[in-house]
Image 1 (cartoon, helix red, strand yellow):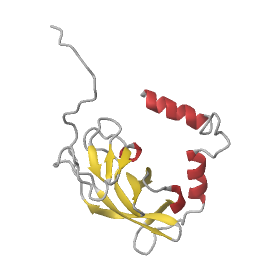
Image 2 (cartoon, rainbow, N blue to C red):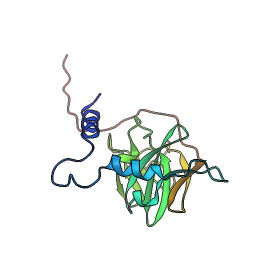
Image 3 (cartoon, rainbow, N blue to C red):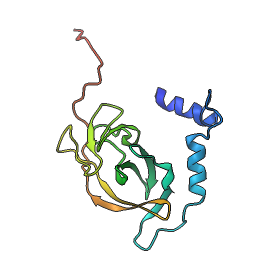
Amino acid sequence: MGLRDRLKGALKRAGGRSGPNAAEPSTIQRRTAARRDLPDAPDADGYVAVAAASLLAEGKGTTFRVHGTNVAIYRVGGTLHAIDDACTHEDGPLGEGDLDGMVVTCPYHDWRFDVSTGACLTDETRPVSCFAVRERDGFIWVGSKVREGTDARGGEHDDGLKTRLVE
């Protein structure tokens, strides 16, 4: 378990935020409230409701578990885009990455992906899968995979770690 996991666990146990904005509902509390009102069954086209549409702000992304897969969903220019959450380098959480226009940067090793196509801008042979997604009746709905990504993992990266060769 890494530092990031320990910090997330501590926040979760504390009920979310602390500090000057503690009166605001935590992300966990907002997601729990948003999920209570979700339709229970898939729609006629097989789409599954994952959250209230208001949960996802413009220029932001978040992750949902859909049919056993973590799917990162982004809102860019009012349009929703859904890709596999696992970076094709070392499975970093793309839903937690920084979004710049249509490009999300993996928080682990800075691999970059186009959220509209799943294309990997760091290594063109390493795209992520894309999913059908739509907003309807105040909810975000995720459908089936519309573009297949790669199963390959690993590769070069520069995470800033400096090492010395010791012989």
